[in-house]
Image 1 (cartoon, rainbow, N blue to C red):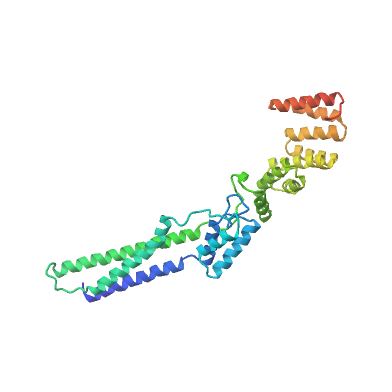
Image 2: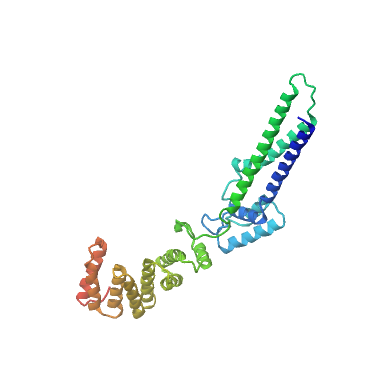
Length: 335
């Protein structure tokens, strides 16, 4: 290969190496990426299975602020992780250290760069002298051209792969954004659900989480905590019919059971029945309040009779309603 051709190939390799270094620098992790990465590795101490990057809990936000501060100070990721694990009881690693596959993605470009540099050094130290007796000049020239082409192809391929990998990572979902689309809410703590609801109060999809949390409070008899969530769903213009009926029925019962307010309770049951006239629960509880709250056993008996006309009742429900109907029809006081 002539000196001019050799120098041209050498210049191209240097150029591709510079491009590779530029790709590594430009697509390397920014401070925001580092904060999100560290946060995604640490379990929130007050949540169930959530990272501090994905949890809206106050403690998680405080921990993320500390991470951002340490990253800004130039502290290494491992040192930040160690500090969090030592400072917050209950904080544990969610994910193991970088896997072999991850290390390959980071080390392969560096390895390719080292190989490229080695080839360049070798090439420069073995100029294309035409004094070999083993191969004619034309064969040696073709061999070097083949090696040069191979190096160029490999270098370009590495650049494309590395750039594509990082660009794909950058275009993916943003880390650290809380999501309330959780399939199993049983694994989410009340505190986390409260924080998520507060942060997404205007989103229509939050009504499902509101009801789930309100039902927890209702089952515990914590009417004061359940009330604002049921009320928000009942007043929501975009709540599903089933959600609105559940909220209205619960509000009606809490008004009666918690405060003895018969008329507001009956009003809530009527609103629920206006949405779903076939709601057995709304009809039965209205009958209970009419019977026990206003003393109108006749109206209560009529509602119980309507319920018994439903052929889909379970045996236990039918037995309970029949007993109430019999007592109300006899003019007995509610139990």
